[in-house]
Image (tube, rainbow, N blue to C red; front, side, top):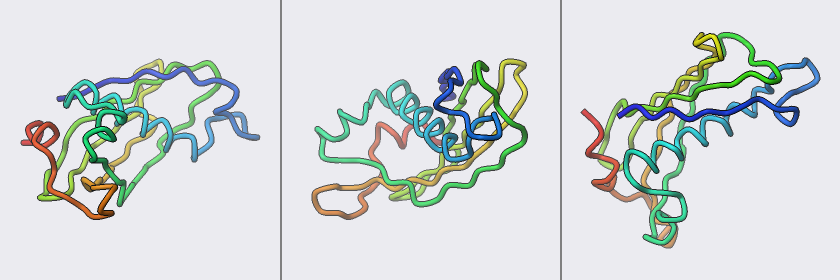
Length: 131
């Protein structure tokens, strides 16, 4: 399941070069993953916390193709790519207003029990979306 999340670039996202700062993309990608959890798995971060589970990013690979500028509307697409026993990979792509790919990332996350501070098997609400 592909989930799209939309963001408008505002002044707080811009650095001294006049484009979105590279660190801000990490936040944009996290917002895209949160939207995926909500729509695909019916899980908000708050719901996961209530259930005593969470996810932890263990690897983040980002490729920047072109810049995003103030006022642009960006679309973050998130889709499942690979499932392991305790981890999973989501592929994310960010497109600009002209539907040009500006950034892509693969994000490896581990299911996590915050109380025990240990990884746990991927829950079925997430696992069922992987091929």
